[in-house]
Length: 524
Image 1: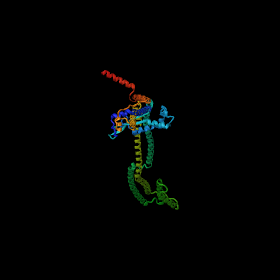
Image 2: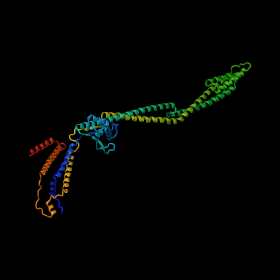
Image 3: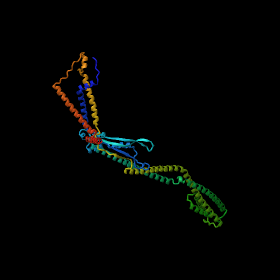
Image 4: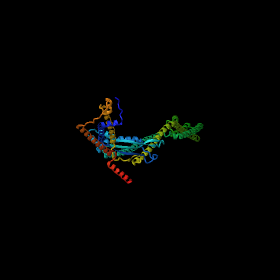
């Protein structure tokens, strides 16, 4: 038997024969799609656009202390607002997700709200002021919320927007206040350190007042003066010793009196002793020597027969003795001056020698004081800038979030897309109908074509007897027509409803249609 090639007419005959095998699956799938499209709850979405405005005052004049990237701040604020406590308060205040209250925990309800809130940054190409090159930056962000009630969705979106704006303002002000508080605390510490260093410098200068670097030239000059004074005193001592020797030699040639030379000597020694005791202590060697000599002379005089010697009466001897005593007294005074100058010279040499080490210690203190002062000045400048920045933030002159598009009341559902669901159902229904009809056709072993029958039997077909319908066949045919009519009505109703909710309100459609027809009539 040769297989017959099927043409368009054959396919139409197959479709006509298997129309119910095609229509029933198609209508069934389409009805399921329609039911699914209209049974799914409508989800509405409200969005708000928040613009990130730069600070009004140029950064060259006032620099804000809030330096974090705007993307980081947006995410940080988003995380705070999306916290469990905040969202639970919003849920309770607006009676959100009432059907979930009895079946789910608070954590699950909060997680559901988190999934319903969206945050989308809006980026644009901007010019980077620091590098002068174009770069991608976030200039705004879209905050949205979706739910079943459009009015509630709009209200919740407004609440979220208010939280975002307020949280951003609070965080910026808080950061500025924290910066100012930190700087004030650091400045207080620096002031304490400066006071401590100043006290150390004052104590150090008091302890080393003669060894400070600024006293070096004075000490050197004083040392030179002392050396010169010592040279002069040495010359005076030499002169006085020469005079002493001269007076002693002259005095030795003179006799104080004719009968008592020892008495004159005793008187001279007493005069000399008086002069010495006025200048020196009893322990001074010259005082001891003169006192010992006086003691010897007195003992000698006491052993004499008379026990008494007259005072010198020789004027030359008396004068010479007085001059000798004066020279010796002056010599003692000059020697004392020399001893004092020698002590001063030792002291000044020690001061000059100690000056380098004292200078190093002093410079270390001054360097520490200067670095502390520089740090203090730097912190004060930063504090002043922080205070200016605080005014910038409190007066909302700095970078801020500005609501440029408020949340609107959604007029149409955001999802589900019922038109897409119906179209997908229609495509699937057609595929199911064609597939089921083809399956019925190719699994049916009956002969439907006289040509095929003639080819199978090798006899010509003389006549075709039509199908004789019974009462049951008629009833089933009518039932199929009723079902087809109902399915058609359901499909039309679903399409009309879908058009009304997804495309255009029927009142609006009829108004536009009437207006178009009026325009056409006017033109005609």
